[in-house]
Length: 306
Image (cartoon, rainbow, N blue to C red):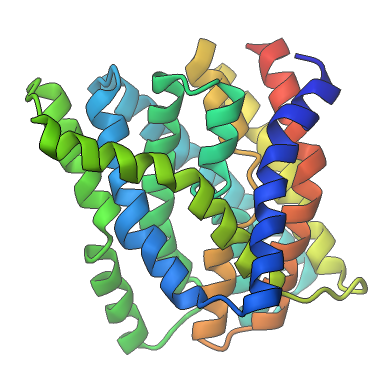
């Protein structure tokens, strides 16, 4: 696919829905708390379960994605810690900076992009679902710990992680798939309806969340975070994929997933713990906007390279 075709047919549809979400929030002051809960506790687990249940899943795929994810996050962590040390960032700024790079939007941004880029390919969707689940775990553990929250906050993080239904949905979906358990239609149909609603509502939610963020063009650290998350991230991912000798759809899906912008959850966590919330919000907003160009290029190069 040509770059213009990718931009028009994959990125523009995503941002049309994000724009509608932003407009609706400005016009009607949408309840972001309710939208977030709807995505976390209803749409995401349904999407995860149904996709893993219906896909050609194997433990090899799970292991391959897990191995890449651990290596990718580890290398990114080393990079941001080196940059933070050279820049002599304070502990609070270092925490936000780290989260903005390590926590990327693999759910309500990554899922729709994957869906459009691979034309609803079940294997590609499975790869993205696994990445999204790992990102959820990372957000509710390291994402909070990196801000050096008080002990009570760390305990809340662990409790919050155990309450994440996507983890249990992943386990159930894998179990049903591996043991070839056939669900009756009266159970499968509601799950499919939930899964089908995931993309639209997720993008609307992302638009509503982004609409409340503000931007300060003078913060150099914002641009530095953007460079690492949107440009350096895919480059690191490419070399890891080559090192691991992955190819085909697996390699393409992992490379594209690595290019996603900073997750809104990084801004939400910063706001909840009052840890540089304005900086976190600006990084999320700018990375989402600039990702229109960088994700387009990553999709294009993923086809050339793999």
